[in-house]
Length: 143
Image 1 (cartoon, one colour):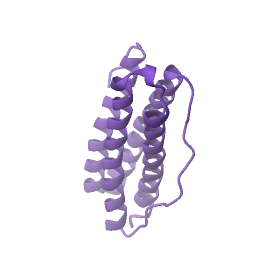
Image 2: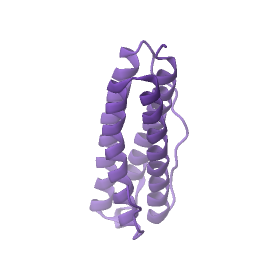
Image 3: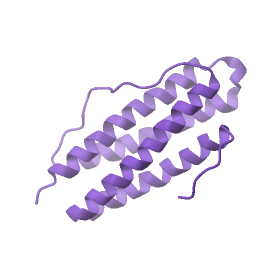
């Protein structure tokens, strides 16, 4: 059994992280001043965390004999502050679901190293869901 299925999943994660970074940075750079430095800084900090995920994923893809994708997928841009945070929450919820599926794939493939990496990233993504849901005043479901 080769690592092809895991590499395919990691490439999907890598592309999604690239788009997430751009979405957060776009919101950071284009958010009106009246949004306040705190929220704009939260966009920036989240982008930095997503960059860390991107680096981890890229390294693991190469270790498994793959090549990370170079094409930037579409990402949400613009809108008022609420729209931006709703877009960010949706992105994080999608990431949580995707990482859970990919963790299960790694377990079925017997790739404990990649599974551990994805679990680490999943914890950050769950925290991001909590952050954006909290910013929007929404209840956060149990993990």
